[in-house]
Length: 104
Image (cartoon, rainbow, N blue to C red; front, side, top):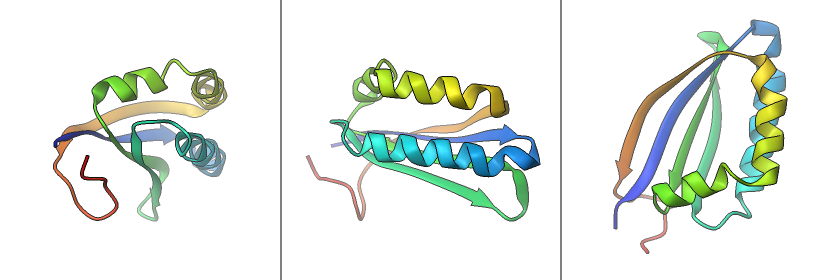
């Protein structure tokens, strides 16, 4: 079964990367309790001190859209928004499977 995946990059001022990373890690923790979220990974790169990457895999696109309406998600978005100077959806993916993903 194909799943819905997203790979994105958030840009911030260099001094705000740790704060945004912390907020996004809170989101990852919150997504651990959301039906349909299989992976929510937050990463940074030494070569890009103003970027934070997020890789997500969902049961389907509807599960992802539903997560955006949750109160916890909206609160985290409100906290993160003032820090973000730019966003890029690198790609929307059809995730086929692999280690760490359910087969259902």
